[in-house]
Image (cartoon, rainbow, N blue to C red):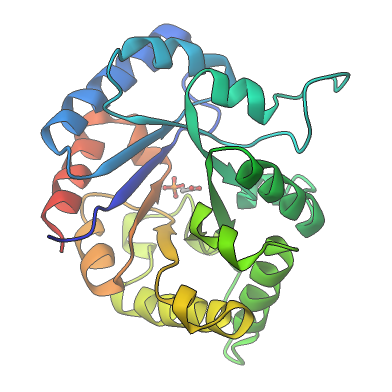
Length: 256
Ligand code: PGA
């Protein structure tokens, strides 16, 4: 049997109301039921999380958070903790998305959040990716260093709780024709496996799950999944349209 693909909806700061969020989630649940071989994860804002959790008596889609606070409940104005998130059913947490890094989140912050997530029962989706590409391939050094620093003091045994989402910043929010080609993504998959190999050993390198994110649509999803040899996709804009997202789930369900 083929490996289960992981398709993650990152709603970012959308939609405006809880009713809209429920409507969109219901639409996605309908497709997720049909393509149940795929692990479908919705990451709404913290505000809409509970409403979506209540929609499903028997979870068809998994709930994910777009971020977490790296600490426990207490006097931390404005924060949402991992315990709060897991209490309402969150099982995946995105850590280090480029939009949060652009707001000032450092590699040390990301590493601390990663520790918080793996000490909880949740899985972390660690985002990495260069801002731009250069002919001298300095972006490879950037990706290497960003990954190693973001992993911080992670122990080898905890790697199975971490999914790496490679999202080149230049491909996020672009046209679907500007997303990475599957064959280019395959090179990146090999490169990331190499980094994990050198840092943690051969046995874990091949097992680490790698997602692609950046302008994924139903037009390019097949190429990226098939030729990129990725374990899944992290999807922004197209995850707000159940029908388009459903098409991607269908493609993922058919990809070996
Ligand atoms: P996009 O966003 O699919 O809208 O490019 C992806 C992301 O930022 O995770």
